[in-house]
Every structure is written in C-alpha cells, then in structure tokens.
Image (cartoon, one colour):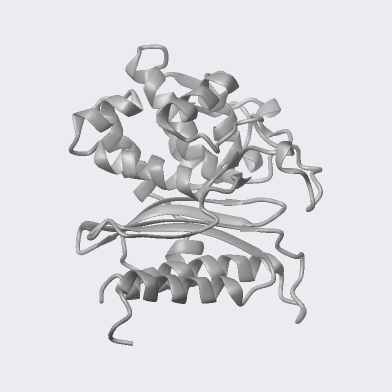
Length: 287
C-alpha cells in the first residue's frame, strides 16, 4: 500500500463508493493543495437540477456589473411566480411581499427557492445565461428552461432539462474561488472582485446540510449548491479546512431508482453516496 500514490488511492476509494450502487455516479474532485484531480465520467452531460443556479447567479451579477440590473431593485412576489414550483418557502407565503433582487438571489441559492429563481431568471434571457456558460468554457452546460415542468417522468430525456457536467461545475467554482484574489479571474466572470466575494459568501450560506455536508465535521465551511431532479441528486461545492480552500467536488447521480431493493428511497442512497465521496476526499487528501 505504501507504494500506491495518493491520487490513485483516492480514486480507488471514490470509485469503490460509486461501484457499490446500481445507479450512475459522475464526479470530479480537485485537491486544491496539490492540484491533483480525481474524476469519473466528469465530462459526460447529466441533469443539472438546481446546481445550474450558480451560473444563473453569476450571469445576474455580470448584468449588475454592466449596470443592466440593480441588486437593490424591489421585486413584488406575485401569485403567478408560485406556479409549477416544487422547492423553497415562498410558494407557501402570501403574495404581495416585496424583496430586493439581492434577497431573491440569496433565496435562490441558500434554500433553492424556485419562486426566487423565477424572480432572478425573469430579469435575464435564457440564451444569455447559456452563452455566459459557454464563454466561461462550460461547453457541456445547456440552459434549456426557466423552470423544468413538474410532470417530467423519472426516465426523461436529457434534452428535457438543463444539463451540465461535473467538470463544468468544478471549472465555475474554481473561477469564482480564483476571482477572490485574481482580477483576471474576476474579469472572466464579468464581475468586480466585490461581486465575486458576494457570490462566494452566498454559496457559503447554504443551509441544506445533505450531500457534501452530510459526513464532514459539522463546522466545516462549504460553498456549495445542491440539486434534486427526477433522475437523481447532485451537489457541487468548495470545501474549506482551517479557513483555507481544501478541495472542490462536483458529484452527480443519475438513473437512480425510486426505491432500492430493501425499500429505501433511491434519493436517500444517492445523497449518501455524495456524502461518502466528500468524506473520502476529505480523508485521502489529508494523507
């Protein structure tokens, strides 16, 4: 075992976690201390679910930088915004509430609220967000819908939803992280470094503690965005240790059964798989 390099040991452990399940798991993990990368199907397109919202946030911040949007704009919560929405708290609240665009971005990211997502996305063009991703080099990411229809079947085609790749999400998160200290990275994102700092802070405010969060020490700082779709669960984030960036992980489960052979819901095991991948990276990259 001593003559096995750390990257291959990590790959063996992470792939064993994936091999233990009947569904597909695609991932990319980048050790930020060494630059080493471990991956599995990282370039293959997969449903993005709400991990797409990180790129929506960044496209909106680019529009703020260009003066086309204002984070202080007041937005009225209208009843129509709750139609075809299956996540977040706003759908249960009384229409007429007024929040800022800044707060809508926060709701979209930290609670994955799709009323807030509509508020943000309606101020952009779908093609604009898609072009933004392509310009960043996210060639496997395709924004196809404002909000995907609720009636999708679990075996829906890829073209029925927004798709991405684990590699694309790692690229986006790496660029956001780099932009904290690099004007060049901030310029690639089309945002000031202050707006990039706001983006990272918002990602760190995630309150849903499944997926990547679930098996790491409770106080671990993670800048992340998770998602749930009809075909699986997914999560992508930057994991910090001792106040410094430690690794980036993007993990996507696909073709997850509604129920496992023992009756456990498939999504439970999908999220557990993502948590185990994050824990394996945490353990292996410290060696």
